[in-house]
Image 1: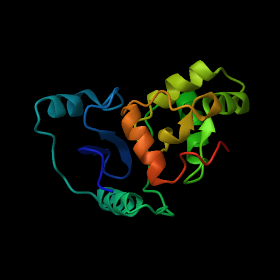
Image 2: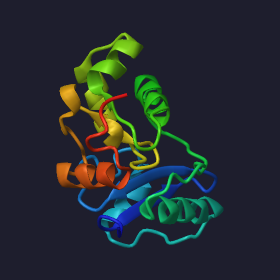
Image 3: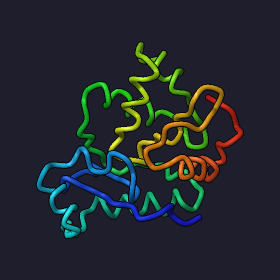
Image 4: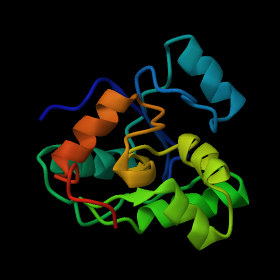
Length: 164
């Protein structure tokens, strides 16, 4: 399987701060203003960092259909609640899913609040928001598009395996 479109990476020089599919909702919302302006002008700096190398290695393994077994260093520029949601998503194993409701119950929150935080995930794929599904395993709410979500879950052989 080939990647599902252009992927943009962002880093603070030490850790990955963003990973988005081209056209993804909330693209770059967590970036600093200067970086957003550079991206808007289509002239983002192309400085290769060690974390980009690790991320590309992760993506190569992932898109070959295997669990990479490691994670590049992350710096999630999100609210405290969004950070809790991202940490919960990082606990969902490769090839498995969890519902918004299950995640919300574990966080003593609402499925709507969890869904909003999941949708604002700044590091798609690596923080696996595609593994969060609706009640009964329905595919709902993916900032990168439901077709991509279905394809990612199929890649992980999670489609039809049930809910964690």
